Image (cartoon, rainbow, N blue to C red; front, top):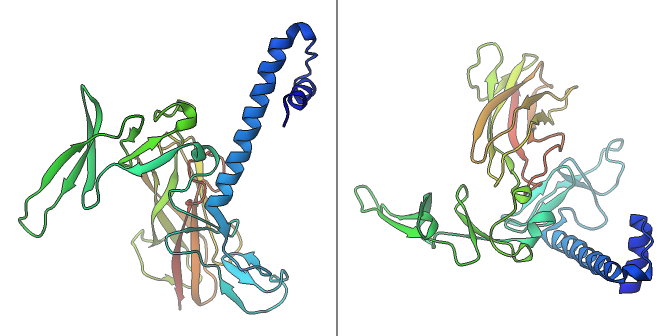
Length: 300
């Protein structure tokens, strides 16, 4: 976009008539438009580099499968499961695979790397006159082995995420410290299990036509607290999608909950999905890791 085009665009979009007497303002607005336009293009490119289709070309994605025809709801046909490359995550809503540690959207302007060297484990953080440090533990190597702790700082210009044990650098923001409005939450389902709705006891299978609970642990692994959100469940082929509404979750916090299925499908095995932020109400640093699955075996 040329500066003259940017000026015309700004005048039309902002409803401003920038006369020659405001020549300095016109150039300022034009430069801002060019920068923002380039930033938006870079964001789109970054997102495309992070995501790719799970299904081959000439197939249609639906509910975890790749079908030869888009008429998967009316015709019986063979299909294959949608599979991502090793280590990548499938977004079951879109059928796209997401590469880990690859940030589109807001995250595309930041870089992230582990604080602790290979062979050590991040165990916590603290502060000193120098700044915030992380504690990296080595050992024990076997029962009774020695444990060594090392205090490690992020490189200059990088900021420590004390929850994840990673260092973040945001060059387009002028350094490693992320402004408050960019410190986003990241809601994930850590664990899913089944319980008998009558007794509340964990069960490995569910009995046909009897109510059961799908229970979960949700965690906020992001850099900011979340607002209120909904946990939804489904995928077993019965009417209705049970859900549970939750209050906000602080950084690093976890919470258990359960949703109730009033009945079961017919005998067999089904893939039950539990989704954090099922209404997509929360802006998150990673929008592709909200789902978890569990195989439900319905018995007589």
